[in-house]
Image (cartoon, rainbow, N blue to C red; front, side, top):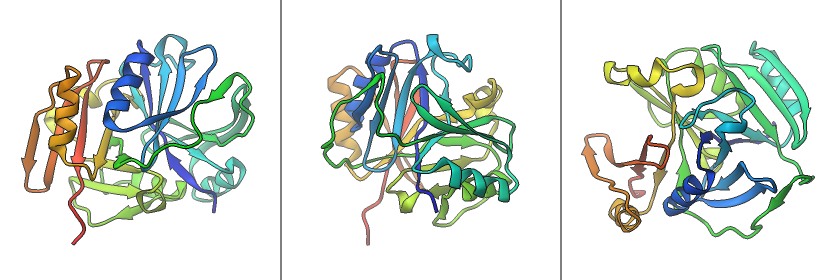
Length: 255
């Protein structure tokens, strides 16, 4: 089976400001476009990419987060998706390498980029990235018991832990390649969900680092990050340079 890595893409008016913000959280840049406008960043599980909204071929607006992935073999993945009944599966070549597009259960186009050693037009920033306590965990607002579960399973993710009618988590390589959360749409979430297409994704993370340490580091750089404690666990919320809310959830220590 082809390996899959979670790689949400944030479209932004200020790539450098967002990069500095994500570095505060614990991500590190891996590859960037020589002309600017793109950088992908790695964490302890999964990646996050930054794309200039001004050069978006999809017409994405600043602050939008799109669910996206990376794989080592788009052809094998394409065959698996077609067998699972996923619609509009297309493999194509781009200037930066090969990619796959498909249609998810809510009608949005999901892109999966193939890993490439050809860095024409790009440069690798650091081959030796220190381990991070942070994992990428974008949240998709949709029915957590609906068809999106089968779609993520076709991509190669597996359900992690229990689930209910409100929330479920899917993991790539047991979380080492990132996670995707499916979140029930509450009334207060409607302003997010009613935005066009893939804007119904929220940039979210989980960490084994103490949230008080993360909040202090953010505060030292001018970002307020109050911590909320609920029955299901603790998380902090911070407004990023794109004026979007980002959550970082505490992973409870292993028993």
